[in-house]
Amino acid sequence: MKKLASFVLGAVAGCAAGFLAGSLLVSDEQVDDVKNKIKDNDKLQDLKKKYDNGTEIVKNQLASFPKNVEDDSELKDFDDIVIDDSNKDDDVTAGDNAQESVDDLNNAEEEHNAEDAEEDKPEA
Image (spheres, one colour):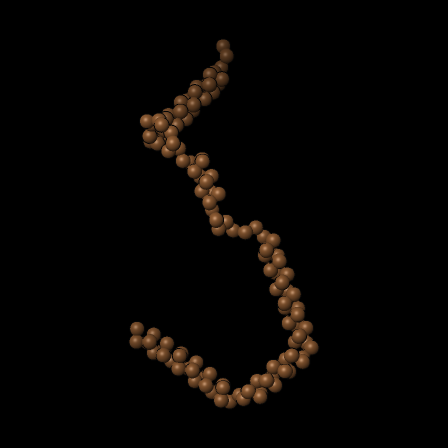
């Protein structure tokens, strides 16, 4: 913990010292001169236009992709319709329904196996 506090304190002090040294070493006239050189430089202005056009193209391409589902109310409504059977007045519980489904599948499988066994019998 002591090392972390020293690191944070050093980082803050270093940033403050760098900002102070930068503001003392570089005058406002030099900053204005650099800004004017950038504005007057045709190559940099051309690059800026290309960059702006490129970012606009990327924004348009990203806008054409389907959006993520943030409002899933439609999905919840669908789940309510398909899954929610709480409005039934049956006394059958979900466990009973599951057991009945398993029994039905087992019976269907046994019937299918019996039919296959009859078909496989050699004819005499």
